[in-house]
Amino acid sequence: MRLRYGGSASTWGFALYLASTDKYEDTILPTGSFVGTPEEALDSACGLSWGSRRWSCGIRGRA
Image 1 (tube, one colour):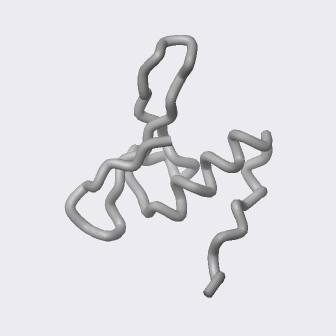
Image 2: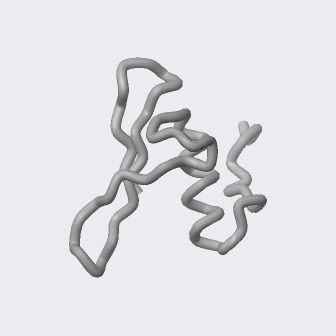
């Protein structure tokens, strides 16, 4: 997974690495946008990895 800074803390691009093409592809977040927060990107990547959009990485709220 790759995050690309978009100019503010809440504007980041999100791309996933595809081994089949050996490059990163921009990815649409579950919100329907190509940009979002890092948390949205991580939640999306974890959901894709585990096959469920409801699953979260569980990193929010940790101190």
